[in-house]
Image 1 (cartoon, rainbow, N blue to C red):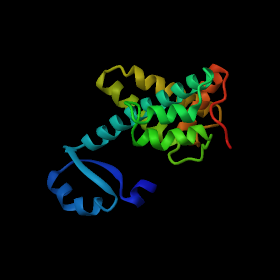
Image 2 (cartoon, one colour):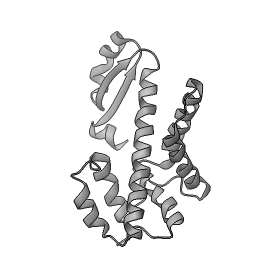
Image 3 (cartoon, one colour):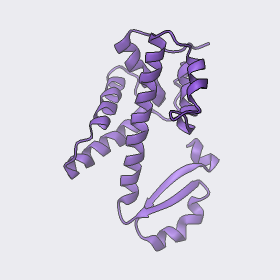
Length: 172
C-alpha cells in the first residue's frame, strides 16, 4: 500500500485500549493510528470510511460525466472546484486520473466493493437501510459485470459514460 509506505495510512483501531497503546508506536510507522473503541469498532469505522469514500467517488464520477456531457472543460472545472467544498485529498488524487483516463489502480474497485458488501451485510444485521451505499454498490456491480473491477476506483466514471453517452477526459 503506497500510503502505508509513505506513512500516511489512516489506521482505525478497536479492541483493548492497553494493547493499542502498546502497539501504537509500530502503527505510527505506517500512518496515524486512532483508537476508536472496543472490539469490532475499528472494523465498523473502516466500513464507515469506505461507505463515505464510495459515495464521494461515485459523486465525483457522476459530476464529471455531467460536466463532460455539458461541454465544460474538465481541467478548468477541477481548478475551479478543488478549493471549494468538493475539494480535498481524495479529490486532488482522483480527478486528475479521471481527466487523463488513467485507470491504473491506486486502489481497485474490487477491493472497495468487498468493503461495501461488508457494510451492506452489517447494515442488514443492524436492520438499517443504506440507500447511498446501495447506489455505490450498483455502480460497482456494473463495473464487475463489465470487466472493469480491477481498475482504479475513479474508473467508475465508465458507468456514467455508458448511461450518459459521453466520454470523460482524454488519454493525452
